Length: 224
Image (cartoon, rainbow, N blue to C red; front, side, top):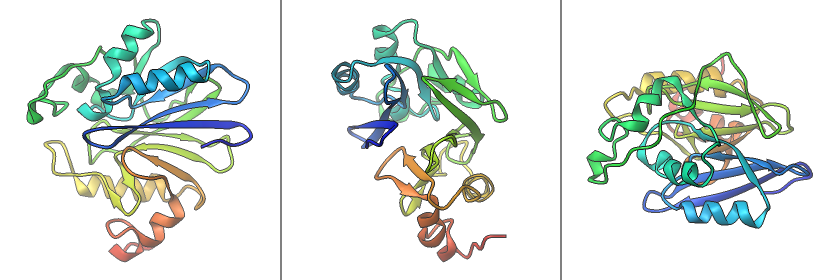
């Protein structure tokens, strides 16, 4: 995805079809790496082909498919900070908490260098990101919102998908918390805001408000 200012590449990692995003601004060489997954070599290829240098590794949450590439990123760029929501930071170093042990693929990540909190903006590579804490899929899940661009862009992780939402049947999951966070924090964004989800294609806030069967109008929700 490319525009006059905003450049975005997506790497889809098997076996969970997880989306890793590499984002940068035209004319700059620094980039964001969001949720590096199981195919770090493909991330390296994108960065090298575009002459980029990572400014930060961002994890929306601490589940294994979204953090599995952290170690490779840190080995390649040791000085690049790793950032995650404060509530999910313990999952980085615990295979039980990050669910990798559940799938017989125990893995750990380097610990967080930066713990993100709602109410504090995070700045890197020319992006100023608002941090929203939206638990329900994972207790410390954060969503990163870039409001300085038109349309607004949302690095949404596993909160809101095209036509679906993140699973809430994990040990720290809660559908009520997830739906409440989506309604209060995401559905108040402009309808044309683009959601870059952790799995599947991009969508927009307006599309999900109108058609999402779990949290949109078909579920009985109405804007209040």
